[in-house]
Amino acid sequence: MEVKRVKRTPWPGAHALAAVLLLAGVVAGAHALQAVARERPGPADTDLELFGVPLKGATRDQLREALKRHGMRATREDDRYWLDFYDATDVLEGASEFYAGYVSATGRFAFAQYEFPAFMDTRMVERVVNMVSTKYGAPSSVKGRYGLGEVRASWNLEGGMEIEVSRGWPDTTTYLTFIDTAADAEMRSEIDAEKTAQERIKAEGQSHAF
Image 1 (cartoon, one colour):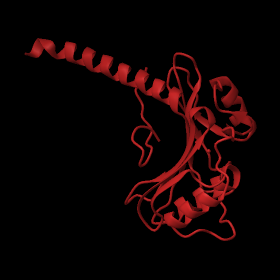
Image 2 (cartoon, helix red, strand yellow):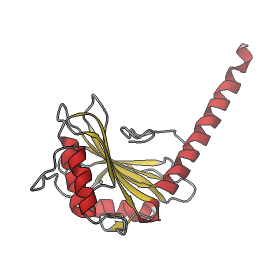
Image 3 (spheres, rainbow, N blue to C red):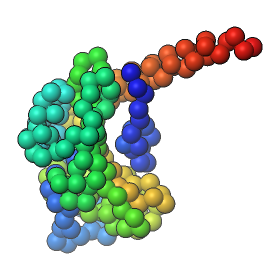
Image 4 (cartoon, rainbow, N blue to C red):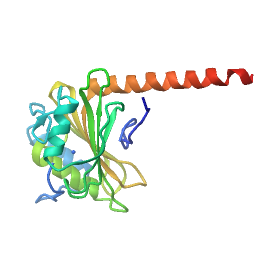
């Protein structure tokens, strides 16, 4: 099984709503967003879903079927790998790629991620945060400044589910990630175990040289 990691920026480890829109009354900066978060009801009682499929406990087959119905074009769907890859350009404005990761042992959803290329567009991350907020309310937390540097906005939902909008720096590419924290940790453990096994096999194959 191939060991493959998708970039999640800036959250370490790995790399999905409507057209990217600026809301009326756009908030300017992390401090303003945090003030709005204190005024609005939090999203803690909201189920996390994608294309109408509740993501907690969703199976690979369930999500694949939903993605297909909504026009997502697969570039790789293969049960031998942890991740499926899709072209998202005709599904979500501004997005280029979509990834979905699953626990190998159970086939259950672990995470999904949209990638928004944003060459020198420092406001892309703000637009994606506002887009997510239309459905899930204000973020639970926002770290960083939209105009400069790394940014991470997160929504903490029921059942250990999370949404994260993030951007590294100086690369302004923005990532929208949906996470089942327990399943994601299980998937990462599988990947780490496979990587360790491959490294051991490689070392054993080199042992004759020393």
